[in-house]
Image 1 (cartoon, rainbow, N blue to C red):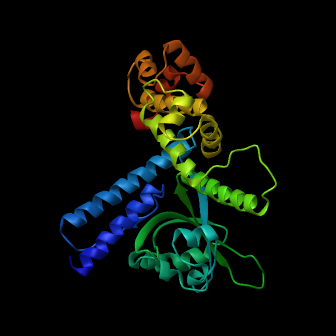
Image 2 (cartoon, helix red, strand yellow; image 1 turned 180 degrees about the vertical axis):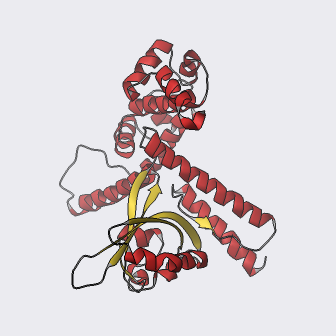
Image 3 (cartoon, rainbow, N blue to C red; image 1 turned 135 degrees about the vertical axis):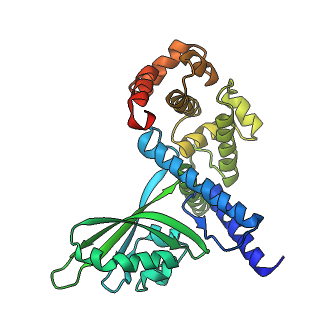
Length: 324
């Protein structure tokens, strides 16, 4: 395999790694190659964009928010197009260190096309004080991946004696579970260090390990893939995944923010909402598909969860301009 093909394959592996960790911001830059690998790269980019768009849909249009979290990436840019500030989420997302970006030209982290687009609009934007401008830019991460972003840009003065600054911001969409899991891992490490330094201090909680988190995630994935079937008891799930019931109960609530039973009901209703909104399948069949024994019980839970019935949802969907 030649060096260029290996480099392109490394980019594919890098993108797949980010996707597997719930990060759908990156894309692979296109090349002039006309081969199967380029076709694969195109397909991967399209798939990642579709997944990211579905997160926007779930987060802003639908009601369930356990799949995404919205953080803003912030830049301050001066009159010379130099980045004078970037928030930690920004430089970490781009895989740089803070000093790699601050006091450097914004061109350093833009693709060639976006740098040209920036230059074309820069003077006009800089003169529009207190007026928002939207600009689509593609950033270059240090790992060679690209990151398209719909940016909101605002020019303002923070000091009468100093020139204007440009505030450039865009949202970073990531799956919430991966962020929650990372926070939980840090807390586990902290508790472990505390236990080592304070051996006499006892806790009533059984400490979770990183392996416990992995097993709890597997339980969550099992539930997601078997929502239409009867879910085993906590004890049976604990035995199946090599943990104990107490750890499963405790860890699941820490990781997902709800009990196992609450999660099962929540996911069943969320999937039922998608089916009801996009199909004409009868309510009774939706209830059976999503593991509800009786249609009237499903209807009560659906209205309790969302504040409207399936028929109300379908009526609104049929009346919306996009469905006409």
